[in-house]
Amino acid sequence: MTDTIIATRESRLALWQAHHVRDLLQQRFGLQVQLLGMTTRGDQILDRALSKVGGKGLFVKELEAALEDGRAHLAVHSLKDVPMDLPPGFVLAAVLEREDPRDAWVSNRYASLAELPQGAVVGTSSLRRVVQLLAVRPDLQIEPLRGNLDTRLRKLDEGGFDAIVLAAAGLMRLGLAQRIRARFEPAQMIPAAGQGALGIEVREDATELRAQLAQMVHLPTLLAVEAERAVSRGLGGSCSMPLAAHAVWADGQLVLDAALGDVNTLTRPLLQTRVAAAPADVAAARALGGQAVAALHAQGAASYLPTA
Image 1 (cartoon, rainbow, N blue to C red):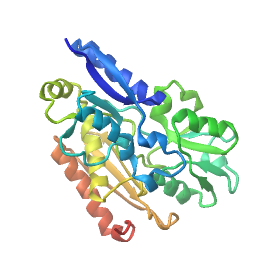
Image 2 (cartoon, helix red, strand yellow):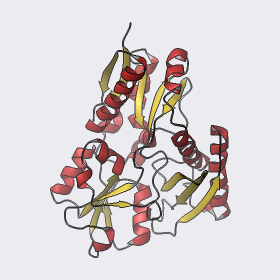
Image 3 (cartoon, one colour):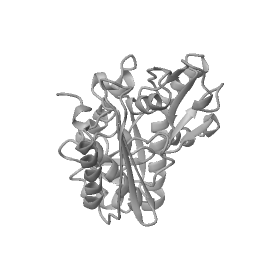
Image 4 (cartoon, rainbow, N blue to C red):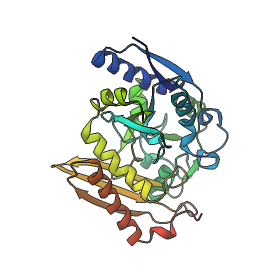
């Protein structure tokens, strides 16, 4: 039996995610699984915002190259890092059950956003987080924060920031939940599309592997993230756009919240919408996302979007 090879970034969080999928594949299908660690362009460029150098796709291109030339059979991604449209020849074969999708408040001195003094320095490189923080606290000084999770925590501990905002899921997966002082409820800060979910990418022609991975799909998570990603796709979303989309199941319905900020005027009032339906398949989930896009356009989203 030939080994199944997982292409993965070499950050501690990416390796945790790859090991998690390896263990699932070994337990469920008896596969022999090896990891192929790689450093991506997104990992190498730390002095500039992702939105300025090509977006989150920089975290997946090298992994896709390994799939294409046969060095690896699958790649494990944080779904929020995966571009809305994959290159021809690649597919998302599985979306696993979601971890906590919320954003986490991390600070050594202040227990919450409300406790911060006027003009405090908060670290995040996410435009989505920036516009939502400024909507509540326009006095804050928000500074860019790049690097892997350990690097970001170190920069906080060295005193560069009064607080930083990170995805709760990554902290929890690495056993760092004790660093979380508070979690933002989605009503306070809407998460990114796909946040907290893992996606498994393979070549489209890997039919046998795709059939196995299809058995690992968590349907409620899949439908939720498809609705969210449809919002981003419909608005041309990327990390250069302050866009949030988060769907949650409640009483048999998928409730989708979305918010859009203006990249040129970060303090401009956010456009927000909520839509709901009971999608039974991916097409219906994407249609729900399309409803949110239409609602945002009805509020004037066109004037918020970057000009080509």
